[in-house]
Image 1: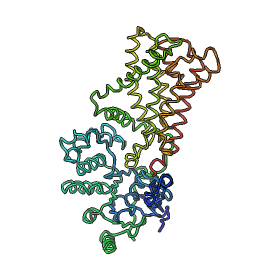
Image 2: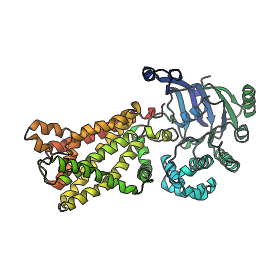
Image 3: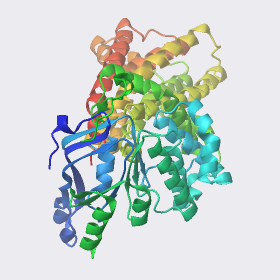
Image 4: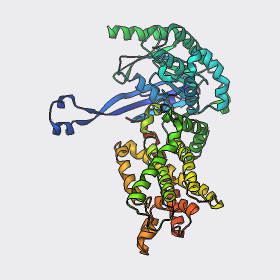
Length: 252
Length: 286
């Protein structure tokens, strides 16, 4: 269901995605060649094209919070990355108003460096100034709840601590559009509560939030709309309860 | 029908834009400049990170090239005695090796700048030129620091410090421009052809012997003009000859050598910049 660009665009549009396609080139070994000799091994290097998104169209208005659900490999993360501009597309268009910032658990930080240094590096890479970082640092340490751990190298952090740090960096300076890719999944209850509260604050300031999660109550509590993806396409888009009910029924 | 509220003043509305589109040159350069604190901070962190688990830490930036010089001196100076036309072989080798390493390290580290930062590329949107720039800067900091060893060798072998040493500053600056170009080109080449990182050491080994790092080209050319011209077309030979002249004097630096180094540096830096930027949208594929 392609959206004609000029019709869908309005001053309140924050994200406009039209017929978006993304394909990955995956280099891998063919499993069935494993047993054969040298010749088989040389031949076995194989490039596969995986269609991660097959024509996705939708638009999001400022102030909306959209929860994206779907099974593993349905293209949810790819969609967020494409909106953030960090995943090359193969067809279609993506347009965003302002800055779209991606928050994902897989984001690489430097494991040998301390939490503080990683905060500074991450924030500088996003284009924040040193002053903006200094200003927000105390609040960040408090919000993250990491305390003394901030001075320790990142390789000593647990998954949950890393998630806390990443979320804190990404929201050090509130972006126009925040894209959250399962980043809250590994945090504890206190961190989730604080994060969801911060997401609500972002929305209140007319920011836009898109979140991928497998936690349905997170979507019910924070989102104004839900999107269900499957096989690189949007299956349902609309009211949270409607979409989740249909997704639930299909997952049974 | 709902009535549509009057829209805000148009100046307050940020325009919709395509995050996949490479910005035009002006905004792109401004965006890179805005990341300068990142480049600077990251380059310093990179130096810290590399040595963080070793006993001598950043002293390795001095020890490593010093040991290399010592080995070459042992083999080529004391055992093989290839010191034809060279009075102070130790200093001759030290300058050659340090200048050569500066480009080798910068290019090698540039070749990994994009492929080793895939995680960062796939999580934060920023002008990718920042990555090879950071690599160039980190290596420039390291080599500038390691040049201390050359000064120590000079003084230890009885060469008095002189004002001509200051000419090293524009030479190093020019070489840094060259290194930036070589690094950005290597960064993009590696994204197309991963095996580049495996091949680079061999390319540099070949270049090493073709740049007069361990022998005096003029002395071995024995007046054959075409050999001197051939070497002058090699930018590494030019940088090394110019740096040697500041400390050892001699007549190796011809106008051709100077012109060659300037043309190479500008061509590589400008070409590298535009070629790297042209591939900007594709670094986040795969």
